[in-house]
Image (cartoon, rainbow, N blue to C red; front, side, top):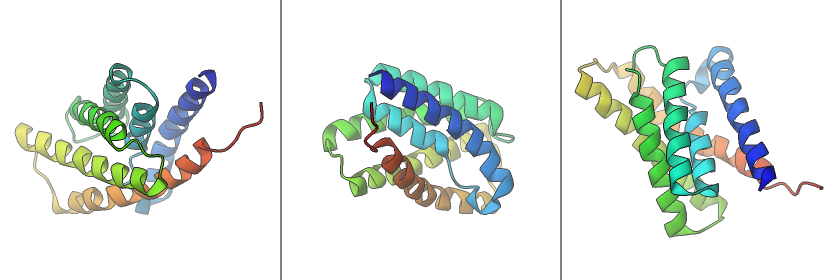
Length: 159
């Protein structure tokens, strides 16, 4: 159990660092959302209450660090919905199959982006066509990067 807590903290800190670094260094990875992958990772390994709290807090943290045009709290609400969906889908599917998990990541990434679009619409913030490309690419890059995190998390560590 301690290993999961340490691994979760390491993944969250690396997600924060990589999220800001990758967008500046590699502009073609602008659709990558490591916070969504982290929320799925936590939702799969903890109970619903913890995953909802961590999902909401990571979304609000994402609002403060990365969002320039999105209202504060939009990603928090989005990640809350993602954490609930992730938890429920992992309990329903109950599979450790990599392709099933990549499909879940793809689905929750779409839900995450659609929630943000809906919140933008509610607040009357204009949605540019150029951002649509990011919302289309994001689920694909999230599923591909989850493959890396899946392989790292399932390594057999020597104790």
